[in-house]
Length: 262
Image (tube, rainbow, N blue to C red; front, side, top):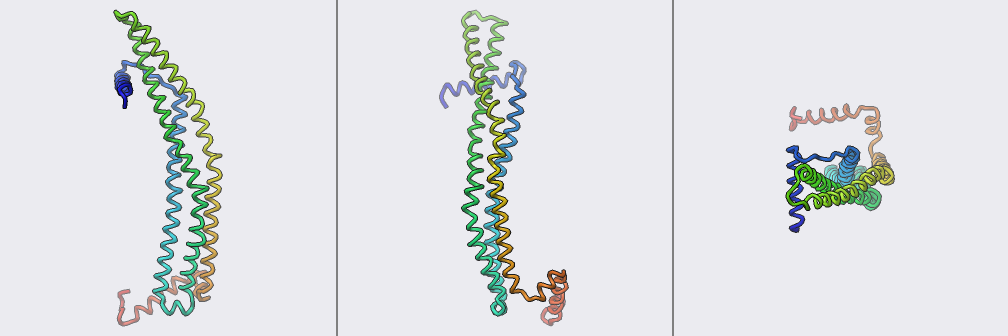
């Protein structure tokens, strides 16, 4: 930070302390405060959306990776029994195809239509926040100089040049503050209103990509279902699967090596 910048920071800090003490009148702009609150709400929602959309892709990757590990374990668990009817191999093949042909194929389109646009949208916020901070600094400068002019007017200094100089500085500070304030009052509402037309295509892409994932996932699993015994499918559709599981568990209990511990 330069010496000039350091002096400005110290002066603004002093002015803010004097405002809290009631020695400097603070300018309140309700119109700007309203628009700034709207912007901050939108910014918070956008940053959360950025995080959650990335989280969705990470979760889908984790889900399919877990499915592949389950398929490998189930195939090993079934062993020759699974090889005989093809059920475990069919499931393993289905989840591997789903991971390769669907999930990994979604990665590029999802980034191009969802993640990248949202990231670019959020990339504007640091510049906007810097402009809001600059407005605050300029307003603090103006309020401080305005208070200085008031003090010199009410209690003139021996140096008659101080008041005109203070008035000139206050006028320059007012012009700088009003310029950036006018820009923000005009453009903040525009930025907030742009969020819907900007996000619409990405939202549409999210729906379509999720629909594709669900549809192809169902298609792959439906193919595996054909390998299940008809009796098993009937028991599941009729809600009798719990009974069948209990029957098998009872058979396990009847084994002398298991006893009643299961």
